[in-house]
Structures are given as C-alpha cells and as structure tokens.
Amino acid sequence: MAIRYFTREEVDDLLPEIEPLVGRLLERRAKVARVGQQIDDRLTDLHTDFANPESTQLAYEFEVIEELVDQIQSYGCVVKSLEVGLVDFLSDMNGRDVYLCWRYGEPQISYYHDIHAGFQDRRPLD
Image (tube, rainbow, N blue to C red; front, side):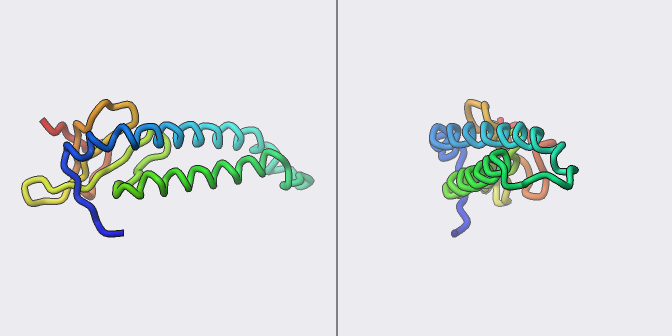
C-alpha cells in the first residue's frame, strides 16, 4: 500500500467511518481480556484440555480483532493502541512528517506528534 498523507480536514471527514470500527475493536479487545482471565487459571493446570469453548472463542476474537485492524488501516492510517483506540494519520506539517493523532471518543482531530514520538508527546493543532 502506498504511503498516504492526510490533511486535518480529510481526517475529520474520515472519522465517522473509522470511529465505529475502532469502537468495535475496543469491544472485542475487552472481550478478549475477559475470556483470557477466565482461562488464565487453567493455563497452569497440566490436565487442562485446550480444545475448550473458551479457547475457541479467544481464537475467534483474535481473528476478528485482526480483521478490524486491517479494515481500519486500509484507509491509510495506523492503529497505534488497541487498549484505548489510538489511530495516527501521516501528515505534512510545514515540510516535515508528523502524525495527526486521534483517540477514540474525540470528536475531531485536534492533536499531532512527531513521527518518532507517541501519545504522551502529542500537542494541540491550534
């Protein structure tokens, strides 16, 4: 896939399509955490049958998560965090590459950070 650069307006126009996908991704991730906790104790038991409904459900959930990440990233953005729903969009800001940084639940793109920085280093666009 070719590298895509986004403007702030393009990201804002795309968020109504991406936000529901990220919401579903976060729901699936939470479900994986719950199912994982349910089977965690069994992992130390040498007599556990790993071909159980919970393990099958966990494998299915991981597959759905992977499909959702691929679907989101097919727009040209990068999923940065499955825990909180961070998505970055490559952009050109005054001749340098930056990421426009969006977190699930934010109404619009309002932050950016340098390519080699992360969420903790994001700064307001305005």
